[in-house]
Structure formats: C-alpha cells, structure tokens
Length: 150
Image (tube, rainbow, N blue to C red):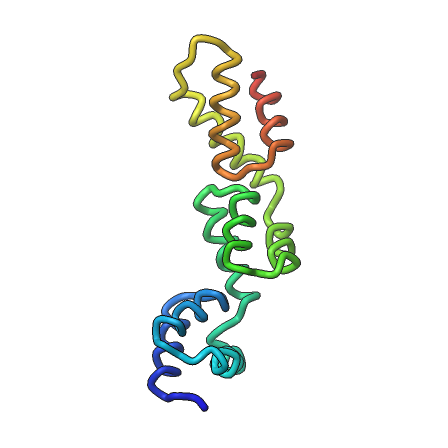
C-alpha cells in the first residue's frame, strides 16, 4: 500500500532532477519504507514518468561529457549506480567521436603547458596519467600523444 506522504516526497525527489533507481531506493531507505514496498513505489514513479532510467543515462552522459569526463569514467560512475550496461553503451556510443577526440587533444594540450619534468619521457608519463584519470581510453590517448609528437 502506498503512503501518500512518502510518495509525494519521492515525486518531489525525482522531479528536482533526473534520478536512477538506486538513488530512489536509497531515498526510500532514508524515509524508512519497508523493503517489500520498494517495487510498488518504483513502478508507480515509472508509470507517471517521474523515474526513467533511459532519460537519466542520456542526461548523465551528456552532462559529464560536457564536464570533460572520458567514456571510461562515465561508464564506471553509471555502473556504480547499478545501471544496465546495454543502456550505458547505447548513450556512450552516441557521443560525437570527432568532438570527443578533439576534447582529449584540448585537455592534453592544456595540461602539457603546466607539466614540469626534466625529460620528455616523464612529461609523456605525467600527461598519460592525467588523461587516464579523466577517464579517456588508452588507445585514444596514445593517438593524441602521437599527434602531439610525444
């Protein structure tokens, strides 16, 4: 049975920004909802389109690619939210590859200006670690490093 007060709180929670199921489940735990009722609330939120995993993933990928996160980091973050890997792949594949590779190059060039190292090898290593930390793929990083003649 749905508690109107709790359901209203969950609606407001989902309306504030896009949410995924795991975030809503965490919210239900803080609201002390009984575990057997989780599915009832989730289904109702989905029926009324307050909760939509597809829309959440699309929004998340878009927002974090604009924050210059790489595909690896975005995928890892979404996996941590227990999002289906097929859904993650769908939206990561939709990213504009030309723009994505340019994003890696711009990040590399910007970081390169601030790296202080005695040898070319150390510069390359520091830049590689930085780009891996941003979540870019090794293959794409190596292409950019080659393009930058490192």
